[in-house]
Length: 167
Image (tube, rainbow, N blue to C red; front, side, top):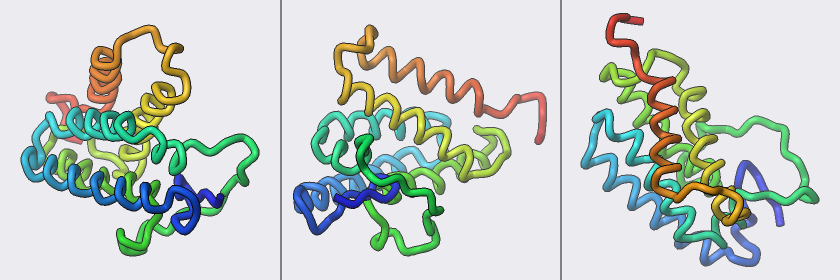
């Protein structure tokens, strides 16, 4: 099975399931971002929704994002300029975040910075939670809700704009 930044071969085993999961994820994200616009709660809700979706679809998540040690390593950069519909599920899930991150930066809720780096930071934290919860469910000692809350709190603490600075 070919993997490309979380892209399972969508012609192979699990293709139908992955395709359905992609559609549900896009629909859920669109509804969430429409409700919260550039609210400071948007980051929390995006991470919560990402974790919830991954845990509701663990098989699709593993096929799409959790590459085994024997899988080929991809080192080339992804072309994020390609249309959303032409991206693999991994890139699509990542692309659900940058517009929201840019809006939160523009609204003053997050520090000014490179949108891609901020997005990758958020995605890495969310992906780490989902991956551990799926692959090692007994490894984490905390309950899901407080762990997700603490992770988002840490992200917000690090990414929020200092009210006294205008950078």
